[in-house]
Image (cartoon, rainbow, N blue to C red; front, side, top):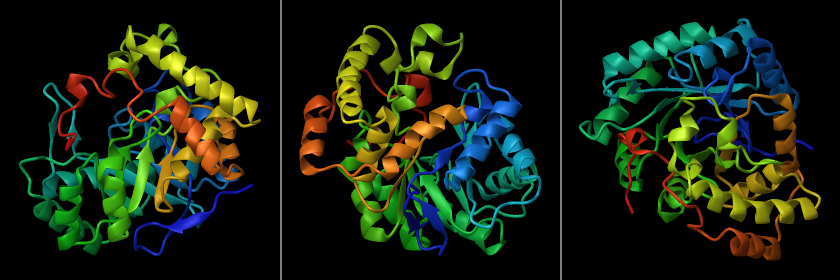
Length: 330
């Protein structure tokens, strides 16, 4: 089965209801290699997953370079590509939403991707010192210059969306959203629906927890991103694993993959909601495809809510150092 398609914001571009997050192929969640990454990208195309999301800082250009080499200057007609910029690595980490910085970073991304333009360009974070109206004007200039067809905002609050959208329509908002990260339900998802903005849910599989087997911090290499994430540290990890194991048993008892069931739940939260799971392997990507055939009944949704009620996760979704410019409005 293939995924249904929806329009990306008001761009006229059609994207599948499940996209591909390309952070993992850069090695940020464990070692990978070019051959495996290329095979994963091919598997995504073969499955009709033609909405790809990357960023300049994913492996400091590695993700974009891999995609660029995969495409070889020949982008499939239906492939929609998004990238992001504005996070300036530290120390100290900072955010730059200026026109000069964003334009320069977008040009560098295009060079790595081997493209003349992208379909969607996000401000990866909103600098609180930059008014949303000013940021919207900057993104509108990039659209007028033909470098991107639309613009997005990431990890923002509803008020930032409303202010930016009033200056130039926002195409998409990307915030973390999954069964264990549900803050967007408190305003962003609804604001996107009202304004005709696509809501893109990143990390919809809880950074690997919603797989046939959950990821194990003991198997992660030193310095791995998740080891600084409170949900993967003691005692939080054990509590989270126990809760998710109950959901895993339930999904497998229904004859579904765990990833497919978790993605189906995200898809059920709104027709404008598009999850973008990531993976390093084609084998894990194949587990997502179950989501295309799963229709959750009212009884299914009630059981999921019983197993994993809102707020079940132990620990914050980010460590203190990762919270720079993440807009927290509740």
